[in-house]
Image (cartoon, rainbow, N blue to C red; front, side):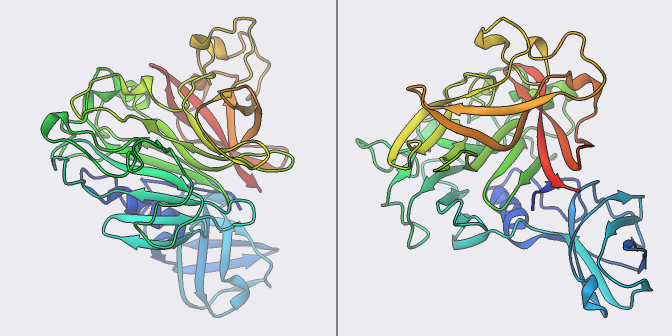
Length: 417
């Protein structure tokens, strides 16, 4: 079941300016769930249940919740929110008409993934559906000894083909440099010339990251948190990370919203494992516009990491590229944006237009389509951030993200109603 998660939910962990904050978010969304609240009543009539809370629940349309503690066990389980007010949610149930009893509680349901190994601000995760995605995601959100506590905060991430303990990255992995086998995991050097990591998920950077060149020595805000949204399934997920302070100018917040992810492509035959991350194996004082290395910053952006060929043989590709459907004849990479610019129809009929994002290897082999994710062919301006809608019995989320140095948007499938 596809599910989505938001930093603004009740009890959601936050992107603080601290090492380990990203692990807390991943644990909550992938493994544990979060935001447990008491339910004051559940009334069931004609297959629909209305749960009432004492206070504002801060849940979102089409999120999936887990109900527990009802005396009638048929009410306990996971449900997609189909309607809501500030203090109620409505969902479909297979239960008799009733006013439920018991000590009932509700939380945001996790994706059901497994945290197979853990360490101090480190984790190795595995998908719920290991038949579709048998790979391991290693996340190291600890402070490397060469790195200063006051610098930008990020996790070093990579895909492992096998793993036997938290610090085991001896099996096939990506990204990988045969001449420097620890390049992605172990920092080198010292001071402002230190180099720490390669594939990175940032969760706290300078507030100027949405508009200016910055580096990892640029201090993040110590008083305001960043924002995050996660959308995922049994085998893949995306993390939309906005690592600047949430009080920043709105346009700067969006151009600092990066699309990270881990999963397997949709394709006949073998499904290719992919990783979306900033690829920055540079000195901590090396400055750039971070939106210029955002992995899905535009179509043809050669920054998706894949681990195999399209038939499953281990073969690292650090420059696989996404292909957006483009509703113009101009194929310049600078115009292949989602939800903005030449990436949108000039005079569309009413509605929201979107299409799959295909993935090609650096040698132009077809690797499949990104799961869950769609490029948007109508303007993001017509809809607010985190707008939800339905089409043909399926529900979707529009999430504003950086498209190069512009504000754009992707559409994510939240699954069937």
